[in-house]
Length: 248
Image 1 (cartoon, rainbow, N blue to C red):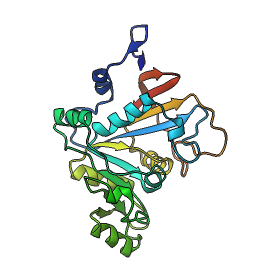
Image 2: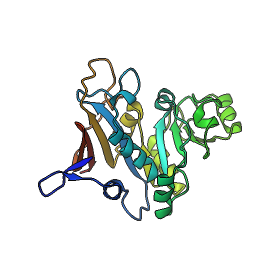
Image 3: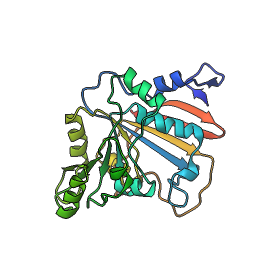
């Protein structure tokens, strides 16, 4: 993996230490800071055959894992968690070392946004995890589903009446001291976060693939005002571009 920008001219090979420096969260946060981590084809598709794996590359997977390693919490929509077959985040040597060096918890919880509490107690995210998931739902979600997830060990939190209130989600995570938020999508959740102006950084991998029509873009949902971003780094590996943008 090579850095194309910022450099003094020639591409520079990126070490793991430099990658951590580039992608780390701002120091000494006292309020939530949200990073979105997404992958897209060259023509804007967020998935191939319904999953993001067909757009990925080992370098992209390294950046994706780093986002989890450095986060207090991983935020994801229930649809994406099901489609991508999420389970709880597992310990590994590099992850443990990175988190210990920063004084973070051993593993970050996964916080799942679901208007209708659509997870099941048998889903790997609930049944195959070390850290219980945080299920962020609303009052309109069926009470029996909420109760079943609570009984299975999930931490069920109601934030909103008819739908999940995303600004309230971010505030709630902040009240728990979970300031470093790694949002992994999908497009609907990212669209809601964008509409509420909650994205501080976008880590976007552009895959050298033309996926063709049919798949969602990385953002779906109602129209909202455009947001200006500032490009802060560009990495490259085998034609894949790892772009990092911050709030302007």
